[in-house]
Length: 82
View 1 (cartoon, one colour):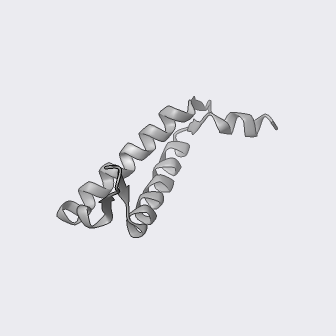
View 2: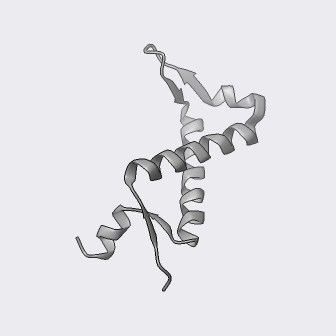
View 3: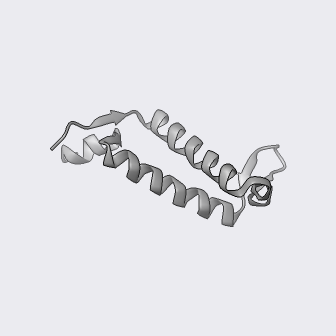
């Protein structure tokens, strides 16, 4: 079994989220705006379809990272039986 590289929660979330959003923007191009909206507080959110797409990309990215032994720090706790 190869060594695993554990990434702290905030960094792991930031990287996977940024990559997923980047992929969405690249794949959707001009259509990206149809998958986001701005709420009353000025915060940009995904529509339901956009959130589903984003979640799918996050899963794919996590799989690629796992394949090269880069994992969320919570995996360390799970492997230790905590």
